[in-house]
Image (tube, rainbow, N blue to C red; front, top):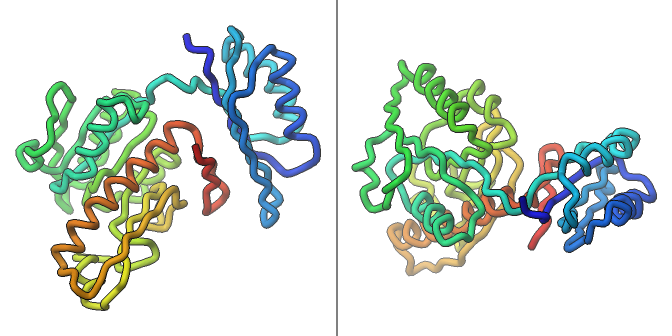
Length: 284
């Protein structure tokens, strides 16, 4: 087992938290490798992420020792392995550029994840550009009448493969409230706009018609409020009057791919902490 661990926590802000946390790790013989914190003055909340070398101490031992202190501070916290690949289920429809990007980054070791399932409402032939060899692919067609049954199948697959994260890599289906609630806190979506922005069909064509000067993409956690979940990462790209709708689509594909990949990386590395409707994202 790797000695590289990550502690993340949030709690009401008060003096001495940083000193107590680092002091506890020191007493356990741990070596802090990276530490970041944020004091939110608006919510009076404290957030912290510490990456450390446990020097042989097991996560279970550290959790047991830290638990008493955390309870007194009313902390929401966890200690996890930094190097263990997370089990990820990817969902996609016909546009596979985000899927291809995630799979490539996973295969070269850029994203610490194990792809345990790919779910699509279209057959594999619809995304033939992407190499799916060796990956479990599930074709689950969906219609308005079969949506409840299809979503139940998705939940069953997620449970069966023990998916820790679900990524909607341009999965062009709106999740029901039940589905969104089931995957709460562990489902990331990529939205083809710099939210808030143009919604509905052909967002880039809408943007072109309005003469916008930049386009963007937003990766966020899925909630029961459509496209209103806490934002993890965003990016934009400038455009000009000479760009056609097809130019915007081309540039949009690149933005979507890199924004989603970065959001997934931040989540997998335990760098994203929920702060009500917002997020605290520790870079690195």
